[in-house]
Image (tube, rainbow, N blue to C red):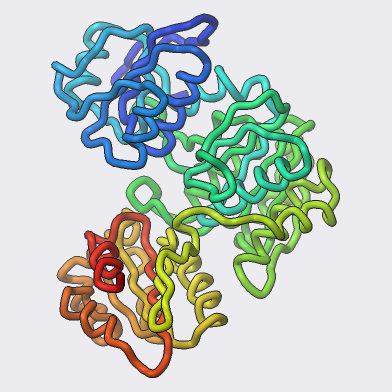
Length: 426
């Protein structure tokens, strides 16, 4: 593990009840870890810049105290400090922790040492589709009596919450390629040491930390090389580059068993089903998995119908990469040809303009609006997509002879425009 600024670090395993302080507790990942720690009997508290619902409600319900604002007066003494990957040097509380040489650990390492270490880990990786496939696997295992533990970066509609700790041998988790902490810049997925690794797709994203797709692929290769021969790796050939496949096939360092398969299908629903079946093939039969998925209810913000009437249907989708957006449009147009597309440029890659050309190709084929575009992007998109404004919404919501689908793709809050649309329709 790499540490910057020559900071001293002591690996730390929890063996008894402790007082644990989470920095960045409002994030989905860190907030869920905090609840897991509380579930294990620890005293848990934390801090974030702002803590919004539903995470604020979840933390309060779990009896976790939290503070808003990274100021030194929100520092509290604790046995261990779990540092989120949004926390950087010059954070006032972090600097206070480092000054007093308090024990620190990253979220992913805490999770492995205190939860995953005793589990058979099923990890779902890829640029997009992780949340859907992870929740499908958790659903299929549950439906077939396995009652797995899981951690999902979304709220599965069939479960009460986005995490659970059970007595089951299995733990299902999203294996994120984003970095771990300010002192550990490698992807989170290195910490999970999966028994089953699923690679759904690899495309260029996270332009704030990666220069190109080759850097991302290099991390995946290093992950695969580090897994023991007992691990199983399933790679969807339709979601990755041929050059990556060839590199894997020729790599003599790899000890784990690899199966390359093609999950390609008519739409993203079927692709995800095929990947779920493959990931569980040595645990549950294909027939039973597919039967279980018939009762799968989906995940909030993953092609989630949030309004439906005779005149309008509004779909909220977390898609924030051109490939995912195209697949989502395909599904929407199978249901209704009259689709208005709203794309929020919320991710770092979107804001940096990495996907502008791909977005223009999408906008050309659709009645499109953009949210959070820079002035330069608005000029670039001018002939293809309209900035979403109150006037644009007024025109969009006018009733016509046919029903209109409003498809909203983005990973933030659409600058409040989604709420405005819903309020105008209700």
